[in-house]
Image (cartoon, rainbow, N blue to C red; front, side):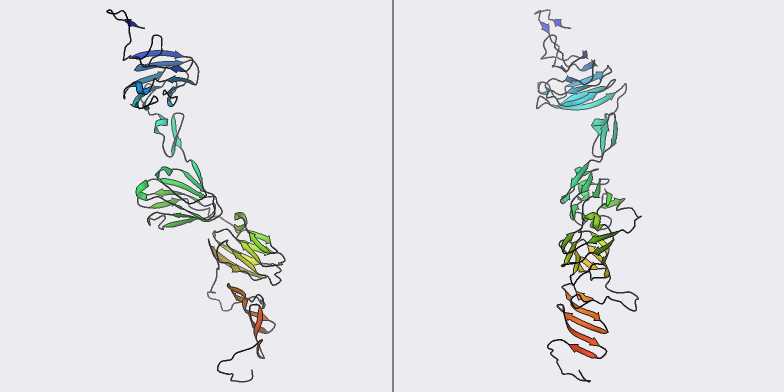
Length: 408
């Protein structure tokens, strides 16, 4: 409808059109009433729309041709959802059948502009799920649902407030991640962490704040937990693996050189090493805090078997013996240094090349047993033996203070 001026006879274009009703069958571009030509679709304060098909667009005029606060109440009186776009083609809001959405310009610096949205709902005003969705929440149709997007980490990282509700999956070896200051994230901030890597993951706090009453917490492979900020410190929920577990054993054959175990192989508490050695063997374990029972069932042939991580100290496992060792994530150590309550300690016999009691720094130096003889070797050579008949020294000896008390 148009109006003619009684003075000039020209068409008068209203600058503030209150209501218009459209039935659209194609994407429809609107113009501001002050700029529109006759028979051109214009944007009124109230726009009633019937879309004859789905996936149609109603495109608003350029925002920079109107003032901040220019508004429109758009009501879908049809049965198909249509989408309201800004002038640049960005979605402002999708209007479902029976809904009414109120939109208004909050910035007119560009043709697209920035638009505010108030959902009027169906008959009564109600919130729009998409406008309420945030960290930990996602809009699905007209409802809000939980959301925990995943991210993968292989190197060290420091979390920030925007990581709220995310699932962080560690995929590297031994490494460290850091929690933010509690003052930066506040009460009820939380993340989820899972160690899907091959080494120990250390979770640190910032500035000495506490996580489960410590400044660090270790996550072994397959460990996971919710980490929640209380406003003063951090707590874990559901930390670790199930309490039901069983020991498993690995039989591993070696010959010579260096062997590197996979995380799956190293997950076996009992490790039985077999094979006929033709040279010294080193078995490299993942850098994980763990306890192992290692049995050296090889035909050693005078060759050593050492277990260690790639960078730490190792332990030599004598042939035909079992040792219980611990790994602190870097170094291997003997699990037992004393026998509490024991009255006797039984050792393997050993040999000059591999004495039963030896030293990590030099495993072919120490004490061993031969038939009715206790002997000592240095660098694989027997130098002193003690029998029921006396002492025998192999090589040149220096005796300080002389020899007394009988025949030597």
